[in-house]
Image (cartoon, rainbow, N blue to C red):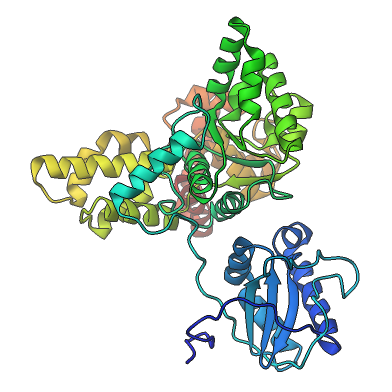
Length: 503
């Protein structure tokens, strides 16, 4: 029996089918070429280069990948496109089955020839497509009850890390990480490292992003997963703790012991690397530790608030080494991701939170996930302590200080930049002496918006526009107000700029 995707309802053990040949190999080479053009060279090499066409079994094309992670990623992200590309070749292929290559028979690395570029051999006949695309298997421990899972984590923590590394938070696992567009690439890279540490192209793994976006959560999740899935020695610590341990070793004249302890781990994880900026001796020690572990085939995972190229206080040689592996950024959260996080947290707390309240929080608190979770925790605690239901009114009352801090604050510089972009003039024209109409009118609009949207005084606004007198600002504000009354098109233009700045 087949499911709605046209795939068998029960999956047989993954086996290596027979080889492929003839027109099929040419079609496969064309499909890979189109994918390379569509996704770009970097993405193609990261995710698609190791695909191997193993066989055509009736109406199904069998594609092999070396790991379960890559199999799941290709199924979920490129399965539909592979199906459509096979259909365009008119070879009768109606389905694709993406499998992990059997042990002892890894797919050949992609090369320049059709045979080497992802072809496992030579083949039978062909048919079209509906992809065999099941959901990715979770990378976590086998199902356990809460108590046994906590005990396992405690044992893993004591056995699988150095005794001087930081403890891992049992809440921070892949299962509890909410994935959305801003963090899906970083999440995928983290799972790849957790599944197969020290893989080529993923060592080191460098995660970067703003405060409270999930870097530390992903690092803990990697450490937990590696601890559960193998007998590896994992050491996780902040850059600050690394520095303090190094200083303590210098003072006690035990630097050799420090080096040996650190370099005996299988996975070294350093959080908030930006803390090492300006600490030259500690950077020197980290650089040598980094080289020793990578040369020994050990995995390194690092996080920071900026990408390696933007960490200007780091030594060039260290910054270069950090950027030579996989660099993954975590963007600011979207509204949809914030809603998903709030829903997951409310469900985990087993508390009924009205959708209107979740939407309100997701709209108002946009800076980082920690503040978002903290606001929800405060609401839940307030409701439990006083026995009151959570409502929109109670949320506004309980969270008044947080909401006030997150009210939109527009700066004069932001107004100048947005207005200059809108009217296609240079930003320097905002403070220049030019009086041409195409420059003077946008400048007046910017002064008007600065008066409406900020709490700055007229003299201060004038200083920001090339040290102009406050009477010039007054004239600009009244002139723009008059034009908005008489010219509806101009009024709509100014109102559009206001909405863009306020949202």
